[in-house]
Length: 557
Image 1 (tube, rainbow, N blue to C red):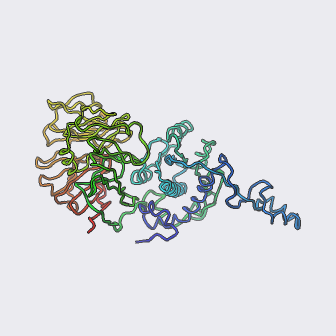
Image 2 (image 1 turned 120 degrees about the vertical axis):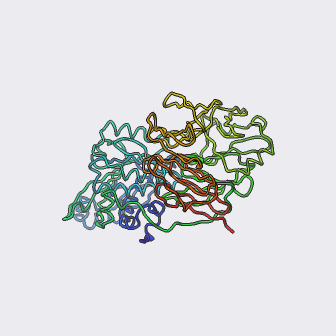
């Protein structure tokens, strides 16, 4: 297998997802584009306060001209004039103090016809650069695809395959572009526009832009491109390697094989879980108040993180750049936020008695897999004692909900309610159906909710929005634990009665995953086709779409 050279180490996290041979041929482009982006981001731009000098440039006013150039003007004036005319004189480059950004990095990518060729390689290299810079700043990269203006997600496992499929036969219009840029970010987010010269011309006032145009042709096609970042340009030679040609055609991009990097963890708790729509895995530590977690998936390092919260952890969830946990301390449930603050939740302090709990019940909860919690308009929703509760300030009240799942927005979880008579009211269909068990809520795709239910535990109806997509039959001795999309087709994730076998069942196919078989605690990701399997000595995350093991950790010692 091709190994990455040392010069590509800064981008190794992102390049780990790509075919290694393609990653190597992209190397020269990464360095040049990263240099152009750094000139704009690291040196602040025209709006920052002056902060000395940080290098040399071939542009500037006479007051910043090097002393040696003035000596040349005095001794060889004609040569000085020639250099001035050719922009060959050397000036001190002013540095500007720039404000520290705490928001996301958003890349708005044009997938129109003028980006089907060489521009596609430039976009790929630019996305790798922006992803690395976002992670280095403690932020994340979100990718928005034009002309639809839809978000491809903030995790590399989401946006890279979506970008690969994003070529469009239609060009983006000025109104569409304006709307996409206006809605792409908020607050302190940095929005980058990636496209060709035409796309850049549609947004002349947008400084953070990376555009490209072919400037030289060879016998085999495009040979050289000029890349422009804001007002700085660089000429790049396109790689002619077969791997680059494959990427231009939409194949040969993603890594298809490789050795899984295995790690060790101090303990597996009672079961690792995906408590939210992002890629962070969470589980209890060996000590009270200890939470363990890591990001898993394509391009993620799987680096283990330790979080000490104090008290007994009742529920927890990953919320983008935060971890939010409900912790029992001194007879009360309080909310702890690790990361960016959340309004109002720090005011929550609910006595155990209001939830019908006592110290014995808390000790019992500590021996179970970690349940999720959700944020809704400054309140916390969490499951205790077989029902869902809403915590607000010092009050707690039970809510009508049998199942909760992540929604389209952080503070708008979806819920399913089953009445005592066994009826589920579906809000999209505006009708009630009799069910044999609580419905399963799957992912939200393009604003439409996937979910399924059964009237007899054997035939499950799968809906997307208001449309019935599939009826899937499940054997009577198998238990459905999740709904996911495999190659855009709905699949039920099921366990045999002994929990020794894991299967995915679609309307026309059943697959048994023997590599992840055996008694264990299983948890299905709420929006991705991933399953995590936890035993006493190992945590394993598998991709039910590709069959790859994404994470594998044994217990140390």
